[in-house]
Length: 97
Image 1 (cartoon, rainbow, N blue to C red):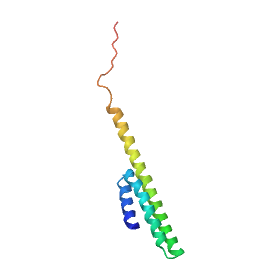
Image 2 (cartoon, rainbow, N blue to C red):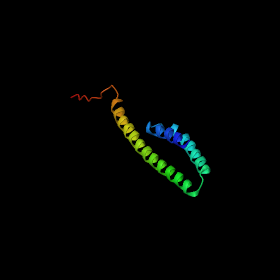
Image 3 (cartoon, rainbow, N blue to C red):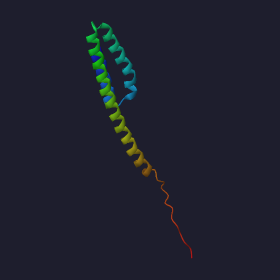
Image 4 (cartoon, rainbow, N blue to C red):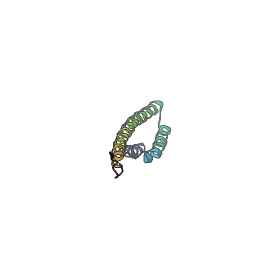
């Protein structure tokens, strides 16, 4: 169950679909809690928690990198759009003398 939730969450983050990823984080947390409840001893629970923590730290890093790339793309598109939206009328000066 945890592996399936991990895969879904990873795919959502890698695709940049953060709206999809948000509910998957909760689903992943529930799967980890379920595995922790099934664990036989403290050593197994510790390993599950450690793996989950490492996975989430890696996904957080990936999400931050993805967000940074998306912000850069939006900034570039915004700059291009601001130049493209120049009005068609060109102002000129005419001096009579």
